[in-house]
Image 1: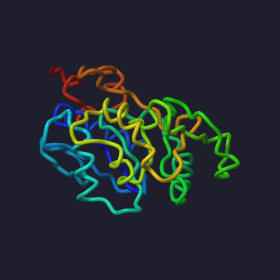
Image 2 (image 1 turned 30 degrees about the vertical axis):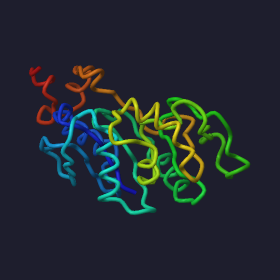
Image 3 (image 1 turned 120 degrees about the vertical axis):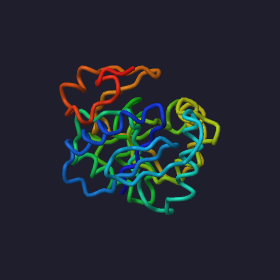
Length: 224
């Protein structure tokens, strides 16, 4: 499994803090860190793929990344670069990864927003106390909350012109194209601070209290 974090130029200043917080939460993480953005250089010790285009074109970056850099059966834990990790249940993440290695399971959401709508205890023999079934017919069956996917399955659900909101709303209607069940944890395996909201930084004081100054985003340093 790879940790695949998507961002864009307008959020590039947040990535050093995001990277620091991930490594703080999981210092011996065995999974490769990969970032996908459009053009502004990211100052992190990790692989970065630059796919030029507009900031809003999340769907295009996702689909192009999948076509160029992903194998059919590999797993990716998909994250957004402004989701600053506050808590990480490593054991639950790894249990979700093991489930997604089964052919009959295509995805596991790691932050239950929205929560699962059904039980997979009998059909898939998963621990019903920890995991539930996502209904592909429901809104936000595709959620950009942290989650494990086979990248090519996720790519099937979105379109090049879609921003993140459209990928969730419209892409949810396409999850029927994915072979295999969609699961979600019942409790958050990853909790985070959504640092940017509608393009504006929030939680700047929390960042200043929890991240060394060398990694602060622009607003924490007194910039705009």
